[in-house]
Structures are given as C-alpha cells and as structure tokens.
Image (cartoon, rainbow, N blue to C red; front, side, top):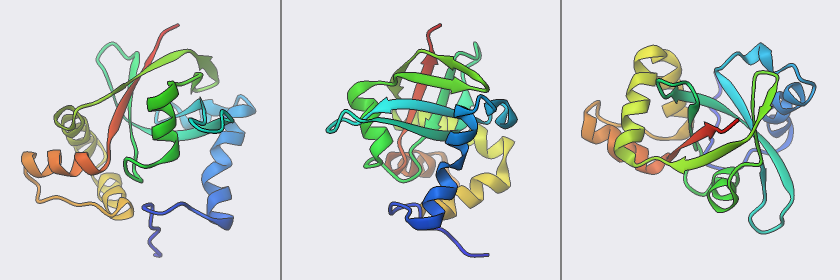
Length: 159
C-alpha cells in the first residue's frame, strides 16, 4: 500500500480527498463520523479568509467537553497556526455547531493523551506515526519527544 507523506502539503486529487469530510459536515451529515472526527472553522492568520478543517479526535477529557487533536503535519500546519493566532470560530461535533476555545497542550500532557490513543487504537496509531513521519522508542520519554514534533491542542466546547 502506498504511503502518504503528511509532512508536506497535499496536492491534486489527494487534497480533494482530504477535504471531502468538510462537505459532509457542511451538509449536516457529520453524525456519520460519530465523535471520532470533528470539524473546526477558523480564520487565516494573514488573509483573514475562513477555512474549515476536519481533524481526528485523539482524546477527550472526562467531562467530555474538551477534545484533543494533533497537528499530524507538525507545528507549521496552517490550521494549527491559525487557531493559535485567532482561536476557532466554530467546532462541529456530529451535526451540531458549537463555540469553542483553544489551549495548546504541553508535550507531557500530549504524550499521555497519545498513549491512551495508542492503547485504544494500536493499528491506527502505528499507521499515523508512519504517515506523519515520526516514531519513538516505546518509552514515556520517547513519546514526549515525539509529541514535540506533532503538537496537540485541546478544543473546549463553550456552549
């Protein structure tokens, strides 16, 4: 099976394929993804243009109102830089649109979230590491070092 390099921006048909879930959310059919994915609406930090990005949920807090997502393409991903600069305009969970706030997670907290993700979804976690071009030695310290390369944020639903 061909490997995709998520360290560079997708182009062409693959780019369209990655954006297809946004069309599903905008049609208010996001429920098909359950709580495994969410969509954020955000503004460009330079252009001010409105963007949507669908992200996989790596974890949730016990109250269920904070969703942790990872920048699999690293700290220079446009959506990641945009929400650090401007926050999120909206968060779509299922077919519902919410307001939300953003908080960057420290690498130690990110590593704990990713460890729980690995336990729940071992095959997917392994494929994600390959796709994102990162790996670690299986230790807690190694996981923390890896999470410095793929930062994570918590998005809290406020309504």
